[in-house]
Every structure is written in C-alpha cells, then in structure tokens.
Image (cartoon, rainbow, N blue to C red):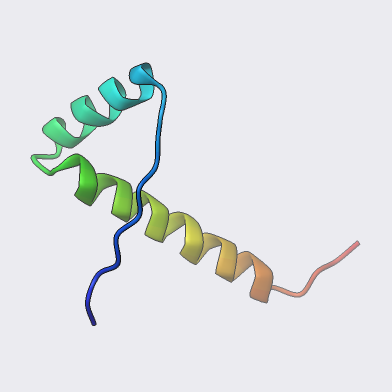
Length: 54
C-alpha cells in the first residue's frame, strides 16, 4: 500500500518542538508526524468501537 501526502500548517514554536523531538528520535519530522497521526486515529477508532455508557 502506498503512502498519501497531507500538507498542514503549524505555529513556528510547534515546528521547533517537532524538529527537536524528531532529532531526539533520529527520525524525520514527516515520520514523527505520520506516527502521531496514526496513533491518534487508531485511538479514536478504538474509542468509537467501545460500547458507550452514560
């Protein structure tokens, strides 16, 4: 399965923090952001599959 491209804009301070984080993990910003998005989507899917209680 191929990868799709997504473009987004973030505040300069967020970009700096992402750059630092990616450097600490010896990864690219693109890899880090893709990983974070994937984890967030998977977590949302998991929450949506759980039975809802009131």
